[in-house]
Length: 504
Image 1 (cartoon, rainbow, N blue to C red):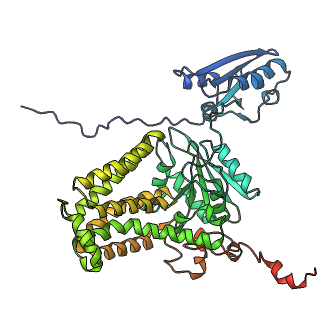
Image 2 (cartoon, helix red, strand yellow; image 1 turned 180 degrees about the vertical axis):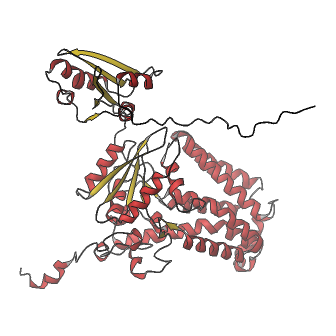
Image 3 (tube, rainbow, N blue to C red; image 1 turned 120 degrees about the vertical axis):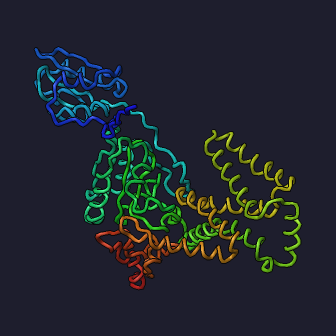
């Protein structure tokens, strides 16, 4: 029997976005490209002896704005220039078909005369963005309560309100071959390093994805170490935080449709800082930062410490607590590491359930999970009383960290430490922490040492890391910001020198 050889060179069909050449625009071309969409509309106007074609998407434009500011002025006004007759804020003439289609898809009305090879894009987009409100994930007591929203224009407004400087530059970038997601790279000219802007632009230009649905898509493509559990780009929903980092010489990337922006480059300690640190006395701000770092370490090693003590190191526990610990472990049928992992996984399940459910139900889940399930598993002898306390302290410590990305990382890397503790005891914990520090010292964020100013060590830049000195002592910008100018301020308390010369 003869078998026909399969043609292995035949390529499977793969959908790819259509790449439109820069051909001249015409009414027929616009109709052909947009046909099949029921929300695509064409309106023909006869005025002053000429025929005008208006193309728009009914789902994207504001009907009242279209009627009052475009159609009526075109019908009532005399003149040949459409851009002078229409009463819209944004007017742009184009003869390129691709530009006209992109304008229509973003809420513009494209107007052109019959048999013409160029037309005018008139802004008529409907505003669907929500009002500016308090950031959902970065609450503070003192300070601004404005947060970014899903509209790129309003997000730019929030930043420009805080930095009224002509050197604040905005560079628009379209990412995603099919979605054409609008993004804006923001930086301060003569302060942000030109090398940094070039590097960011190069990485963004190399993204060849069809679809960009969130900043996470971009972050995965432009990070230096995508396989590291630690985030190398800081996401924030706070305009004041973004403005502060811009003034340090960093760059900010805004993506349309997302209420968070990306700040780059950053260091490990940026994820433990909060705008509220600068609204309190400097020693209180330092105390809160130190508390967050202690919470990070506590949440990381506390379950592993429990496993190591119960498995290998009973001698370090005071004799009074040994009997209590032994009594709580007598009826637990599983090894300590299984007990700890079971409770940590149960905690993660409760967290995920609380996040996915509506707010009123999420509060109920927290009460049921924390009280009912916790009491039930202890009474059933599945876990010890001490393990419940350890898990509760671990959860509270992880909630102290202000960055969601770093908090999620912490939840993940705690499990390997428990395994090491179950095998090697305290030596396993020390070994795990050593590997963690080595990994942090090797990371970079856009060429900047991620664990700076500790690796490499720069003592003068410790003023704004795990502690915060008074702002008038922060005269230099950190080198990890790659700022073109490191001088931040002069003597902001110069009045103190001349105090003796004042007469009262």
